[in-house]
Amino acid sequence: MKTFHLQIAAPDGMRYDGDAVQLSVRGIEGDLAILTGHIPFVTALKAGECRVYIGEEIRRATYSGGMLTVTKDDVRMLSADFQWE
Image (cartoon, rainbow, N blue to C red; front, side, top):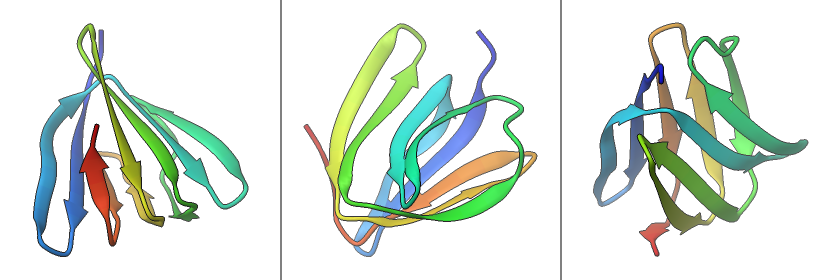
């Protein structure tokens, strides 16, 4: 499985900094699934559930909205409140 570098941050610190296979979140215009090689873009996020696919493991979290930045080299998610379940 191909992976990409993912960083998830909240005001009080980093929540995740490592490789991921997929990131699923809710953008302002609908649900998004980010995979390796995704087109670069920036979008605002609606509050919802986040799923981070790390190898065979799926980690779930809730977040209060925020911003998602996808570049050629990595993905960054910023949220005012991010809590792993």
